[in-house]
Length: 389
Image (cartoon, rainbow, N blue to C red; front, top):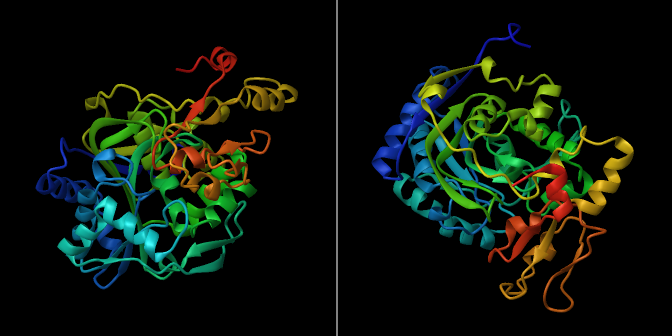
């Protein structure tokens, strides 16, 4: 692919704290490095900033996009004369009550108060045709995301139990309404199919630009139960696949080991090669980040090609990681059961019990548990086979 297309531009700037004045300055610098943005975004455009607001976490937990980064993006767009909305479809039920509690915890009400932007409370959806999709030819999308001139993906730099990494592309899964996300998980429960669905969504939404909050990220068992890591970077690009390629490379993850980047390459949306990227701002050679710890579940993503096909299913069924519920920490809220795509979790005894024969290892339960009461168990033989962690 190299030589056939122009280099994609990714902007990187260093930012060493969440001091608001510093963050705003660095967000503006990061976006100003992409000079073509101001040619696309016009005065009067209606733009929806899609933050990663996975669930009711506070900003200092490094689960959600920090409100100061969101605010910097909002002010940048407002300076260009845009009408700006901030929103997401968090995990679990999608209604006004859940949105209010999520917006409050994640600091979005404060962003609204300080900037005068809107927060989206419209939980209706539309059914659209996605002709260029590979799997989601017909899909549901939150109405608000379909009624604006542009969407911005304002993501968080994190590892992910199912997809290894989450950034600009995976963030757009939150344009899908509420529990429809669980339906898509269930229908496309293999890594290949689900990652293709994520690329389908991204290619339909086509964010005008994507920015990743990497001032503090998350490693290990992300996207919500991992360990916070200081990285000190903001990164942005018009191409979300190129942005994810650079971001993953910086934190020591081979880009083409990430399913969404691999799918993008297969579909000739981007090569997955950092040599096909023009980095502006801070150069890659100047960044020295200790590689992120990977999720305990990572091995299930990369078994393909490492054992013969006739053994693959047997190995996966017998040795792949699985969710383990800590009943001492559990508050019996039922979020895990209600969000489980195959309905493999039983709450009849008050505490969750999982049927591993039905479990599709999407780890939505682990992702959405408010008390981090769910671990990912990795069998000893699994560790030896895959030599992980």
